[in-house]
Length: 356
Image (cartoon, rainbow, N blue to C red; front, side, top):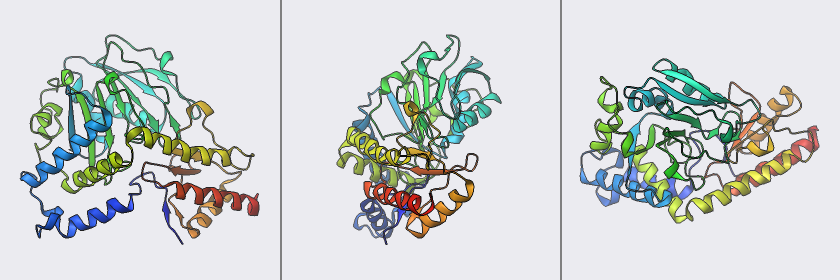
């Protein structure tokens, strides 16, 4: 029986990437050393970094006025590091409250600066960028492009404004083409579309460097990390290697336009089953439904419990909704194959026939 993983993170990996990483761990390029043993100051690790940055820039068509930082930790750490690095003498930042993770970002930033909530959504709708009340005196404007817990995604990205636009793109980074030039900074954890947990990628425009507050520790200072090529402290070397392998796989798979087409096709199949009648129900509005995290409910929590148990018995793992939201969630990141969605769709139809 095939096994399919729909986890929100760490996500599934392509078989060929896992095979390559397994070989890397046992013997890095015939050296007799494991990739886990490579010194982060050595030429081999420098080559991994260079190749990863090259592929990332090619995928995003990233211009030279952006620095690529590959840092320890997850995106949640950036919730506090953003005001520490970007506000300088300013004390106010604009935030969009669109779901669970944007609220977490607001909570963390509020301890370090004055947060102005310029737009707010609800459990089923996102606030359209045209309605945001952006302020000219803010240090930056922050939003979350895809709310994994709520199954909501901004399909229309905001325009650049008079203040730098900052985006947490952890869930949908590299799942579609994006107009990077609109943004001052983009950040994303690596465990959803770039391999292993423990890595955060930051794309920061040059004009936003040099603003860190006095006393910001070196490993958390974007400017110092940019100058040191992400090596102020010992980086998570294996997570870097996994990201490099995933970036190469994405390039070889047709790039971001092809990834976007695959992800839309996968989610489209799933939403078609959900919308067929009222047995399954998606709380998200049609316009704001995520193509990456498909969240839905059944008529009762008892049925949801049975659904999850039966799904796992049929090789469909990690379909539980976020612990603060409940329900069912199928995360369809880049490496989730269409065969996984086909298996889930078939199971959902059969479960409804048996239990509906």
